[in-house]
Structure formats: C-alpha cells, structure tokens
Image (cartoon, rainbow over all chains, first blue to last red; front, side, top):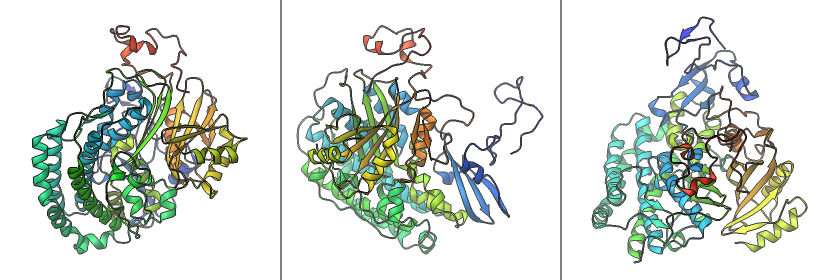
Length: 407
Length: 181
C-alpha cells in the first residue's frame, strides 16, 4: 500500500490538484483491504510478486484486469478485477419500456446477441401470456443455432490465436462472416441483431437469407471439418491444452457452471433438453459430453456442438411451418404484476432473465444472468500451480465475453 | 406447472413458508424468511425428494419497501424452475445469510447483489464491490437511485400518460417507486 504525499494535477482538469495518488493500474490497491480475502491476497509471501495483466491485454477477451500473485513463473493465486465495461444495463432496462430493453441486451454478448434477447422475450411472453406462432419459434431456433455456430467458430479461432496460432482465426472468420452476412440480410445488422420481438421475430425469412444459407449449408460441414483439422492434429495446440485447467464435475456444478464448459467436465446438462423451451422438443440432436474437463475437452466439445447445431439447422429448414411470424399484440404492453424467469442455452451456457412487473410498461426489476461471469470466477481454482502461459489457454477455453460479465 | 412439487414443498417446509406456494407457467415459487435460507436450501439440495443442485441465478430485488434475495434452482425431480424468495430484508440494513458453503460459485453473485443493493451476505468472506469503483458510495439498483437522464424528468414529462409511474420532477427526497411484490 503506497500513497504518495505530493499532490498531482487531475487528468480531467489540470488546475485541480489531487491530494491522493490514485493508482488505477497498480497491482496493489491504494486503499486498505476491505475483506479477509483481499487482505490475504495482497499479502506477499516469500519470493512472491504481484503482476497486473490488462485491462487492455488482448488475451483477456475484452477489458478485464487480472492481478496475479506469482512465485517465479508459477501462479499462486489471482484476483480478477471487473467493472471496466460496466454500463448498468439492468438499471437502464428498469427505466425503459419492454421493447426498448431488448435493444439494450444485444451488446452484452456481442458475438452471440440473439441469446441475450431470447430469454428476455421469453420472460415477457410468460408475463403477458402470449402464444408465439410456430413459424416464429422455428425462425428463432434457426437463427439462434446459426449464431451459436458463429460464436463457437470464433471461440475456436481465438483459442488458437491466444496460443500464438494466427491461421485458424482467419478460417473461422470466413465461415463466421458468411453467417453474420446471412443474418444481416434478415435482421439488418451484422452483430447486434435486435431481431427477436415479444411475440415473435422482426421480419420473416427472405430470399437472400435462404439462398445464402443453402449455399453455406452445402459446404459447411466439410469446411468446418477442414478448419478444425488445423488444430485438432496440431501437436503444439494439443499439448498446451491437454491436462490444463481441469475441472471436476462436482465442483463445476457447485461453481454454477453451465454450457459447453460444464459438459466438457462430464455433466450432460443442456437447458435445451433439461428444461425444454421453444421447439427444441421436436428436434433431434445429441448433447455431446466429454469427461476430461481440461482446456482441450472444452475446445473439442465446441467442435462437436457445431456439428449438432448444423443438424438442428437442417431440421429447422425441413420442418419450417408456414404462418405469421408475430403474435397480435397491442403496441403498448403492460403486463400484469408478476414475476417470470426464463433461461436459454447459449453458446457459453445459461443466459437467464428474471423480470418483475409492477403493472406498468417498464420492468420493475430486470435481472440478467450471464454464464461467463460464473466461468470467470473459477480461475482461482483452475490455474494456481500452473504457468502464466497456461492461464491464457484456460481463459481462451472458458470463452468469456466481458460485455456480458460487466453488464 | 408441476403440482407434485407443490405438494412436496408444502409437506416438507409447511411451517417455514411465508405464504402459499405459487405456480405459474413453468415456475414454482416459495417465500421464506432470510434466517431460514441456509436450512431450506440445504434441505432442497440434499434431500432425495428435491435434489435442487443447480443454482440458476441469484438476484437481489428492491421492492421499494424492503429487499429480497431471489434464488432460482433447477433439479431433475421437477420440470419447473424453483424460485426461492427470501423476503423482508430491512431496507436500511439488508442482511441475509450467505450460501457460499453450498455453492462456492455464489460468491460473485452475492458480491454483485452487495454492489448493486448493499445486501450484506453473512459468511461470504470476499464481500467487496465487484463492478463499481471501491470508493463508490451508492447502491445503484436501489429504487431511490434515479437515473440522471430519466425520461420522466425531461421536458416531455407528462405528455405520455404511461410515464406517470415515474417519480415526477422535484421528487421529494425518499420518494421511491414501489410495487412488484
């Protein structure tokens, strides 16, 4: 704890002299420890040192700061420092009407935006007792699975990039770009789609989407197979990931893990099957599971999930019913007072919304649950005893998105 | 809606429930006092009739009169989400027992609830702010914390009747939007 006595000019206004030196990026915080754990963490043992990674380090997948306690190159403990991207989305949503909240949710998970909109519209539909047309449900599943594929492709590419492999990300982006372009043709946006509406979706499938999708589906399996071949058989990649960051299934459940990371530890929990929603009960797909629980398993599980998503997309195209894509709803929605909770299986795990209505057109409480937040929490249990370089592989394999973590 | 779980909950927790078991769509809801939280969640976690071992979410809620802590649980024994609401936390000094011993993963969720509502979770050994800066004094998701650019304070306030639920301009100190029981 070092506080200097000399005053220094403020960054905002140089005429103002600050009494205290505020060390924003210093590893040791300039204030006394607030909790037992903080005091313990910032007390150095023999031969230990603290280093600061981030907030602008490329391997942190966003704006995150991690303070690491090292002994040599071995990680003893770490303390993630969040909040650099905090925008207060929950508060903003409590001051916006139901339709407006959906647009606030997109930037939370900027690589898989549809999965943040989905639980919100589901929660509102429960509050309003709205029946969603079947075609809209199929379109949601279809676009959602496309978004899942694009998100997993990105995760796989960035995993290699964090380990120093520059090529896979380029191939991932070829496929991802095709997917975002086809989604852009129906939603009008490449990343922040704002496509799901309360009671349906905003706009039906169009010719451009269908022709692009048809083209892509005819080569997707082959292409993705070829892309993952770059990594699956790469000895450096495999040896840096195997046995690193092993999570055992009981602890994974206790750490509130969900999604591919949980299934890579051998727990076959997938909300699409465990708590079915939308039209998933009508679709035939498997829940891939792996037992190793290490970084490599989390990577390989995403590869398997992409294949299952392609199966779902294929079935959606064959079973797509005709009909309207929006339920008939008044423009101003005022749900009766009540509470609703909706959760969907996203590419990173359980995205959930708990919405409380007080009878007005704005949610009274709008709680956003993000899986990355809980995966990030487990760093302290995954990497101690490993090297700094292993932290990178674990971070990449957990695939956190800081937009959702910081809300 | 799962009628069987309702019966099981009523039989097992009849005396600690603060109100009836409510069900709507795929959700079952029970309300308990904060002091009963560790005991009830432990029973829901362990007992073969429940086995609610997945914590779906932990949220703080400010109703304007009091605070709540809301837990969402998932189990193979019921097709419903189980919502456990710890009701009636004092708004001036909200305190609730921590569930970190059951779910170590709840540590950050409780830190978030503390950061946003000021709810103190007894037993959480790392209860410090998580998103807001360490020298921040307010709890932003409380209902007496207004947004500076609140639509109702803009010159258009009162034009749209639906905005009447907001506190009007020149709100007296302490005026809070209430509801959402």
